[in-house]
Length: 300
Image (cartoon, rainbow, N blue to C red):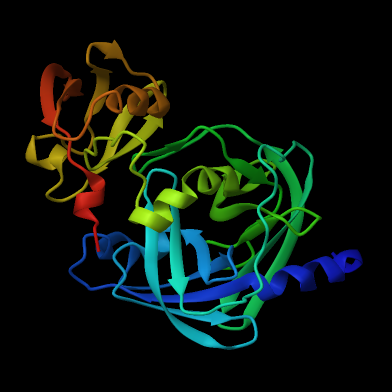
């Protein structure tokens, strides 16, 4: 990256550190902790900052530290659990910010730079290439139709900046992966662009149909979907789904992958009954679960 010092120094002022506290009784605290750190990118001169949802969900307080050391208290402006993005707001104006890259401008093999917080004014940088734009599905009832995977590890806390060599924001770095030549996953900025106005106005996305949430952690294994865990007091637990159960079908459609599971589940809406065929201890049976609304469970 030595040949691109100017690029990096142009991006750095728009990066921030996040320190977040969460009440210990919040549903997210058991898995994510009650004190979290993260990275963010200023996307608007009036103080809007984009990061990942898992850093801020349940937040009772958020402290933002700019690259120059100035600190602000922040509020959650909008959360989108379906894409995994979170928008926070500080009371400041005329801030340095990154412009969003043009729509659908990411290409395979494109060189990119990642910048993430390592604590308050600390920043770490890595560079690589775009290795995949494939869909991504996660074990926490999460799926996006397009992701950006990069041949470099996220250098700092989650929520960091993924930028092109014009200094434009391409995505928000979410996860480190363990895939060959696909070391980091970022959420494309196109998802924010599509819903930015709604997030700022309503704090959530209203135009997209709500998805039912079951409270399961499905694992794909040998052509089957196995329940690796069940969220306490979630819909799946209340209706009798257990860790180790194999989901054979949803609404009589055979399920062979986590992606197929989500696609069939999400044809329903929160409050509607979802019919599953389950294999447990060599016995198969039908189990109906009424899906909940994840936003209600994790609402701050």
